[in-house]
Picture 1 (cartoon, rainbow, N blue to C red):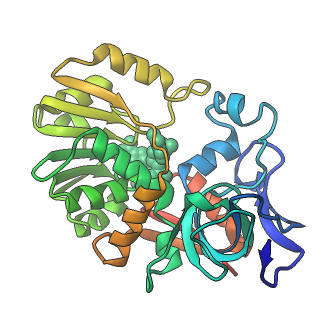
Picture 2: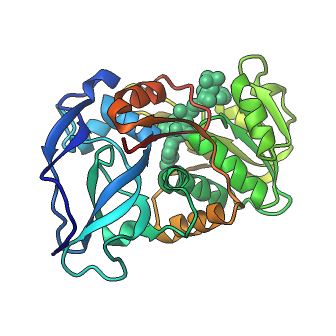
Length: 330
Ligand SMILES: NC(=O)c1ccc[n+]([C@@H]2O[C@H](COP(=O)([O-])OP(=O)(O)OC[C@H]3O[C@@H](n4cnc5c(N)ncnc54)[C@H](OP(=O)(O)O)[C@@H]3O)[C@@H](O)[C@H]2O)c1
């Protein structure tokens, strides 16, 4: 193993029980050692995602079947990361100590994190790691949504619940593909979305989705998970797709009852698709390239220092973010 100067211990934000934001606390733990095809990163920035909140709370309950029945098996939170390679495990090709990289893994809310080398993309010169750290999970989700709905030049797209990290990136990428984008969001996000090129914004607290044009959209993207499925389906043109992406869903089963109902309501000409995003390194690389070229400008609502990551988690847990929240190294 090739190493840099690395301390023995570090600060990491970890939890030993499911619960609200205050279960995640700063701990002093050993700096991990990279194994085969892994590297150790000094974390520069880690963005937060709704997935961190689901894992923190163990909600919906069904996630506990996969991530730990009584407490999360993986104690550290954080998935997205941008940072500097400071040590290489065995059999790592294409990365060197000192490289600035970005990718998705786990336990990234820490001073150092071990990452699989093939999950990382090198940052182009000049791209701020804080910006890069917003891209892996939410950016891959946005690309998966737009591909599932075949959004391209001239598509008319309605994003329902577009104010958060997934929504703002989906909006920006849909506009970049040449789509005519409409969005529902909270009032604080309306100008932000219009600045991204969204043609029409609607405050969800004062306007029902049912008041938007019927039979008008090639794609309806349900990020909020609240409007009735029939209302979403009726916004579609013939041949259109409703993408089911987010929302709280059932306390135990989460989105599954809504997905099953949606499948029953699907019509050949107006169908539902459930979206499950997987983070792919080539997609992240393309998003990073777009951000470096200034074609994609992720919305960053706030940054928090690592020493105050608990406040960042509480902020995202409250559910009112506009764009992304990023934790940066102290
Ligand atoms: N399927 C997948 O693979 C996948 C991947 C990633 C995320 N997700 C899901 O996608 C959803 C979005 O996640 P996120 O992290 O981007 O954002 P988020 O934190 O869930 O979104 C917060 C934003 O949504 C707005 N909002 C809340 N309810 C709304 C409604 N009924 N209509 C319109 N806007 C509403 C809020 O506005 P106010 O503050 O004004 O209320 C706030 O700006 C989550 O449910 C997450 O679990 C799914």
